[in-house]
Image 1 (cartoon, rainbow, N blue to C red):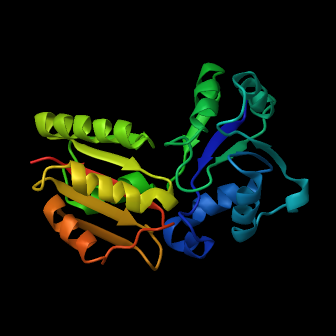
Image 2: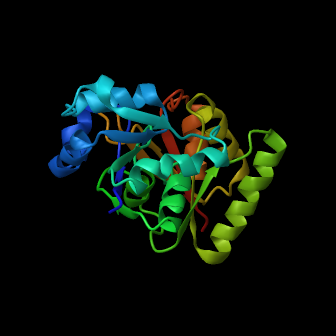
Length: 240
């Protein structure tokens, strides 16, 4: 018998929200696992302490899987599962394997015939899409746009053309300390009537979700009434 790979969602920035965003049965499954594959061990330990792990934390087997993990090491992470042990996959925030390196382990599990069981929890991408008021029938998550200003401008204009042609909502994220530069670039490069949503600090007490035309965002920036610095944010737009 092979083990089950449980895809365990994490909170989106504060473990104080866990009872509001994670069902009790999800926390119970996580608390009873003894083997974990995690994006960052320190972050995962904080999460496991918060959900009151059944066994002592120092006895838990924990391996990291992140963007620096060589492909040759991924197969080795399957060994407990092949030996019949259940394993929990935990991201630093939100749902594992969605905009997350854990997808590599999920793919390997399928190839090895290991059962994969996704558990219910917060997804910033879906929460932002739900709350944006933009087209939820057709949307695409683009990850990170280029950091280089010229390449970023080209990417924004290309995505707006695709959005207009297909009436497709475009979603992407940015490193929190570059949020304001991204918003300023969007305000400069997008058509004034394009609808732009900025979703910040989802599920937290400081949550803010606002959809306005690009023209209105330009005005807000001129008035300096927007502050996204170092706050987890998603950007979504839909061209008219």
